[in-house]
Image 1 (cartoon, one colour):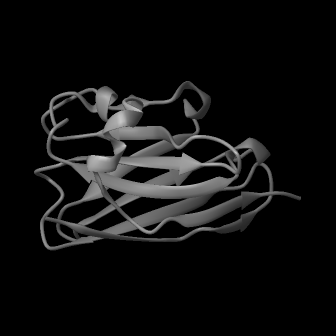
Image 2 (cartoon, one colour):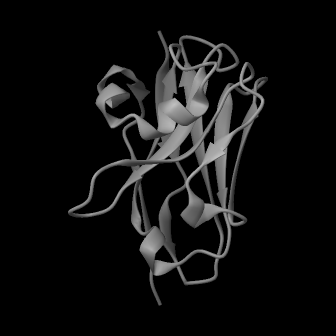
Length: 131
């Protein structure tokens, strides 16, 4: 079992950058499929970026291509979401998640909403992009 705690959200101007962190306890992250998700007001939660050591091809939603990257520091048991060229439509509560079932299919981890209830989740952090 793993516990996740996010940090790093805040208010940023359009075009700016922000890095979110997600610290794990109870287990290391290298065994899990891990991902970043977001939920804007009035919208469903969506998978933004998902990856794992077992699936060499990370998945990302098209709207963040070329702007967001995800990486993991196993020594610190922390994963990160680096967000560049932020847009107002990126405004949302961002969540990190971990799951064992989709280690070999990270796209499924991101897109299969019916499976979200089975993931380990952080508490969420607000990101607001506004001038």
